[in-house]
Length: 627
Image (cartoon, rainbow, N blue to C red; front, side, top):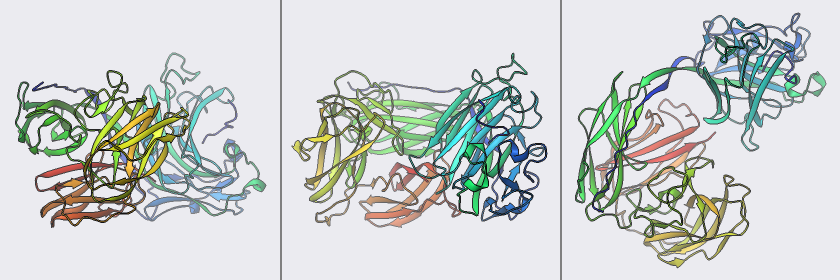
């Protein structure tokens, strides 16, 4: 949104890895949650008029007249309502608010959660203008467009305006879409991270544009690369009707159905606070130890030079094991089988800073082949491709080249793992050549037919694979048609007949080449359920995942236990308690999380973690909530 026409322009393998640095941590410094019944006058001013006489149509040939009556606060939202009504010489009315002379900001994270109005001629925006125009009139002093969208609202844009005063101005922009979905269908989070030498744009935490100080300038200060975005800016929210950005500058081409509402759940600003990261060191087990199978006690020392230690968490690879909040930081990992394990201690301080210390251990007799997450996958289940068994090359997998080409998740393995752009993110296995294979230990709960879905990406016609259970080919040769890109994901489905019991599943690439995200067994199509109780504690992956608005979390108990089942966010904050230290009997149990927090409010889209504590057992699973 802008003022002028946009068109112008062995026994023990022991490795310690330590990370500690000075970093920046975003802390909330200002917000309006719109929980009251009226606009907070200490934060906002309702803009009035149509820009006349000095800037009729707000410099963009817009068609609305802004009125305070079109600005309301209700139901936990700021509501800007656009109406088809004549007022003040305009054919439409709408709402606009700003924080000028009340709340101004220089650097940080500026964020809004909102649901957009839609239809031909609608132009909702979330943007910032300079408080004092230090470098001259628009756009010499700059403009930051955090989010703007128009018409069908199937994409949103972000932009910077800078250079000289109009008409010597210029701009840079980019856009983001949901693959055809409408941003008016539900709430999304729009934000920028604004730093002296870089500004980054996000939608629901997904980065879609970055601009640096080498790319912007102002004619008024050619020797200052940070200008004009080194001064205080204020926030603007408005729902325009018509204008150059929509391609509609007369009332006859407006096709939106009125009234239209722009719903803003909150606006928040976070300050970038320098934080010296805490330190952590695993003191036991130490190099040269070869702990026997059974219970292993881990001890860690942790400190924070400019604050306090909140917790030290212990992980097996990516799986949460437990935590201690007081020194000395001790965790007992119970019933550890012979094998090779990577255990990480992660310290978190009072500003969210963290560092890690990692030990690679051979326990007892050593590796052999074993489930990477400690327990077999129990069908139905989604198996992430990168969670192949431990045991190494030629035992749990076969990879033709040395090293992890992608360098992600399990860097010590030769399997090539990379970040994945599929829905839900995470990691995937890439650079798969013909003849390479991966194995996973699974439990089939009942004889029967199962659906097997392989999530893959490929640009090669004729890529083929098969899946075996205990050496028996259950799929036959399956052709995976080219998906159109190495990060463009498709699903290949098969129906397989499986016998109950613990099995070794092997995925084999017959003809190159693949990237694979996961193998999913979504449900049992036939088969007789077993009457036997579970043989161990298991927290299954939730289903569906990703999900909206709810997902089912299933867990197994071999015996009665005191159970805690909680959901927390990526910062470790409690979001929802699903089972609160309750005595639960042996068997399989299901709990539905409806995507809401403890106060009943809908949780934001993003990554969450579900943690099960049941007697001596603890396990965490990753979940993705989409909007």
